[in-house]
Image (cartoon, rainbow, N blue to C red; front, side, top):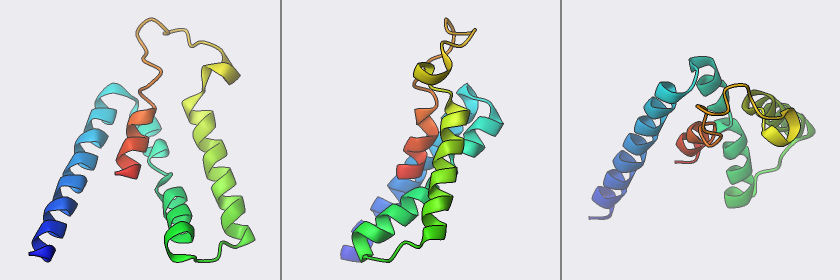
Amino acid sequence: KQWYQRRVREVLMGSTAGIVKLWAYRVMAVGDVQALMSPVAVFAAIFSRLLWGEKISVFTIVSLFLSITGIVLIVKPTFLFGAPDIAKTYNPLYPLIPFAACVI
């Protein structure tokens, strides 16, 4: 019975992540969505440290920092870059959609 419950949970989480990713493609540029999906490696490194106590090397820390910097440059938060020209039609929460797919 336990394997069945685990498989059902995996299917539900995978399906939800796929649906969220497709929604992100619908409301954002394809390049932005693909770039914002890159935090999967960041989350994997963080969770491997938290859950399994794996050591994180200096190279990994530098890579994580560069990944997060690139994500911030793609998302263009208004407190750093000001309001976009299309502020009336653009929802500032849209860049969070791919992050949801990464976490799920």
